[in-house]
Image (tube, rainbow, N blue to C red; front, side):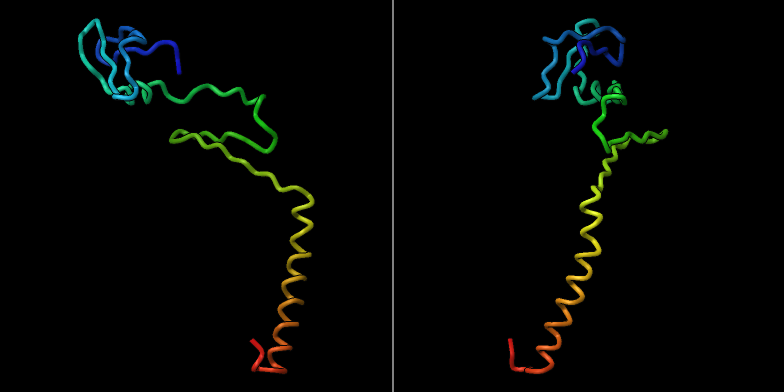
Length: 107
């Protein structure tokens, strides 16, 4: 949470003691108005991100509308398992089908 929020009406700082996030209320002492705390948080915008310290495989994609965190990591071992799995499924399935064709009473 940032150290300082400002009132959307008078732009004066709102003290931390005047904020109750549980009740979603922030009271400005200068103009004596109560504001929804969620609106104050939304007005701050996205927090700055140090892109140099992101974990491997994570990148941030930003455009004028939104900010997305994309995680993409496929290990070489996982990529090697794909052909093995396809072969396993194909040959395993054919074995079951041939047994069922030979003996239809088999469950």
